[in-house]
Image (tube, rainbow, N blue to C red; front, side):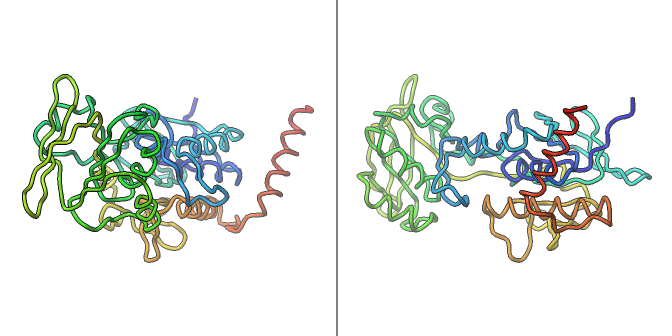
Length: 340
């Protein structure tokens, strides 16, 4: 039996990839998602499932894990094939114009490929102070997987970006104490997060760093050092959250002949790359008016699918009918099939 050739293959199962699959289904395109992670959701699942997201239209706030669940629910009617734990290796085009994407699990055939791989593969930037390695997963963590475990705990958070301040604001209501330490006197977070933190009872230590981690079978204390006068202080803690960001890499994608910009892929207004039939959307897509937001990824996903459809069949219209009409047509087709 010949291997199925999909209309659209989506590389990446984060929020942009999931919405790409939904929109492909709504536009009546066969679709497959390939992701290197063991679960769908990208960083929302792997790094901050219990973090609230505030800038998705229609949701005053929504937990990252709930947004992922909603996106997964949205693709269910379309029987999208899901391939997890697959790492991309090579990409070639056959004489018949079919793209062949090779992963560690085999070869996938597709008419078009939409790369929605976020920042690529990523790993947290580790703390380098003495004891950091010894107490990793024994009090030191680089992501919050379950918020409830910090109830009545003494928590120190290292970092000055959005994640550090967001978690300081989230945990201050349940933790016994929250201390935020930052090497600078200026934060790199949203102004709203900074103002919110200032209204809490969290302790904020600026121009300082964690110089050492101490404990026995688990983390017990941290040594704080002021970077201006070298004064030191020992703080008893139960947990340390290190929020220094992530190192990211495109991996083998860099070898596919795509035009790159830093750790991203250059696209035009149609989300097309320099390779015919290959598109990109979400954080990995780079253009002059780029905003790295989840909602931007959703928009780019729809654009990429629309023009992937045109690439497959030039007679197709990029501009679709309204979603209400598309869903009514789908329901009528299903009803006819069920009556025969």
